[in-house]
Image (cartoon, one colour):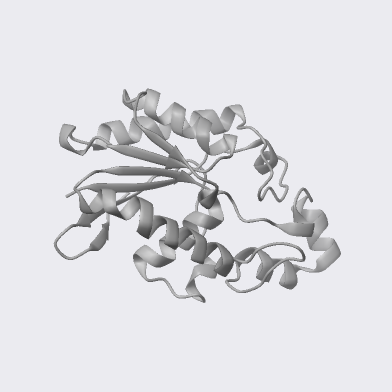
Length: 206
């Protein structure tokens, strides 16, 4: 069965500084690059030759592009075809973007900030909600990524915390309430096997 792997990019400079990153484009840190190397080594060790990736997908932001490059070099697949799309860019955080999270907590309160960060429908001022991202990401997945899986190709996606949470909701049938408790760490592969006969996914053990 084809493999489908999603990975949140390695630590970025704004992750390190505890700032709301959103659609901004900071680079990876040295730790982020090391996380990407470790992800590549893990995937290389866990895959057999028939499950090498056929294609990869990233956002248009440098932290996903560099993470993908490092992973593929580590795996020995540096020439893998890659599609970059704005449909996989991180959600816009609006007035929160660039703010230190501790400062934002003081300004807006713990409860409000939690709803903006983790809730499904809550939208920061001038920003996007997870539900906004869900519609965009799932449409892109169904029209662009899924056909490759249906053709038996193994696929790697390097994305961002929120758009991968939205995709995870779709793949694992997670409710809008339950997704509040889901956090994707940087640089950790989440691996699925796709059953072409049933169109379903099985989450593989870590």
